[in-house]
Length: 75
Image (tube, rainbow, N blue to C red; front, side, top):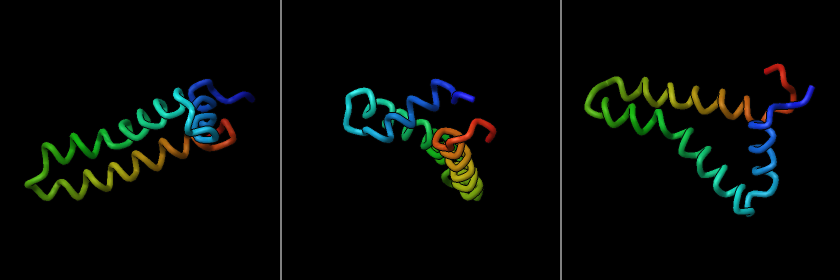
């Protein structure tokens, strides 16, 4: 099976990170990974929920990176 175009573009960007399109894709990936952390801590900074937000962000990042950079389609 052929991986999706979304995955293949990010995998190509990882292999050649200094091309113009690759830099944009990797920066957008970093922003996407940090999005739940930013919004979660913006709203829950003074509460105990910020620990849950950080743990949730770690899980969010793990599963996105697992999906994007795995080699088989059945993830």
